[in-house]
Amino acid sequence: MRKFLKQKNTGFTRTPKFGVTPKGGGFTLVETLVAISIFTMSILGLITVLASGIADTNYAKRKIIATYLAQEGIEYVRNMRDTYVLYSANPTTGWTAFNNKLLSVSANCQGANGCYFDDRNVSFSDTTLPMTDLLFTACTSSTCANAPLLYNSTTGKYGYVSGSSSGFTRKIFFIYSSANEARFSSTVYWTQGSGSRSVVLSGSVYNWVE
Image (cartoon, rainbow, N blue to C red; front, side, top):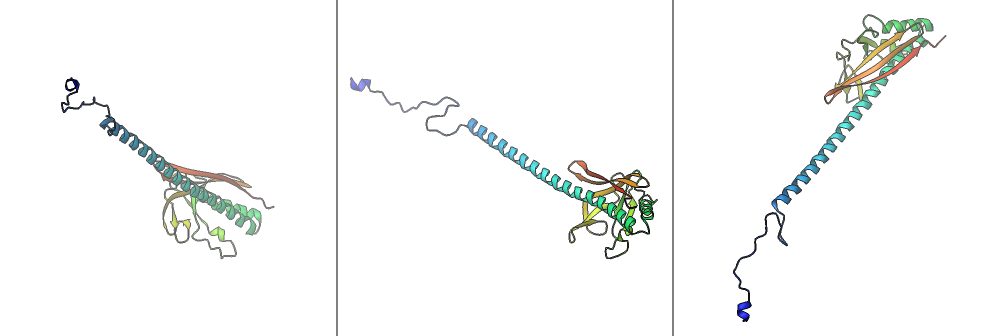
């Protein structure tokens, strides 16, 4: 009787249904593919965030440089006004000479495209009127593309004499000029990514010496 009731071992095992993991087994193909997809999407998202961060950092750096270059343009104009007004025979004569310098035919800073200045002839060891040697030349386009600023890595300065192209251009534009006031703007242009960028600063100078 005991032998009859004893279950006979046929040598076969039960095959699990598709998609069901046997107890103690590994991952199925579907589970592996899902895990790989989630991991890949996470990596792609991280790379996108890093790329965006690098681009934003580079833009911020370029904008800071452009802002300083635009401010430098304003300071050059103010310095030249001070030189003419303070060191000429009298303030009125100096102011007139300052206006004539900016509105001359060669400079035409009040023209449609404005002008740019070149300080290659300025010698700060000159004790007379060094800033009067500042060269103003008309721009031939709205972004002054004919006068790209060069960066000298040795001196750390931007100019038009030596160095490699910095990617920046600067334009001075005189908005208004009268007997005792001149309004102007200093704009720096550069190209980054797929678009053109610019920083614009404005200021006014006066014939303030009586």
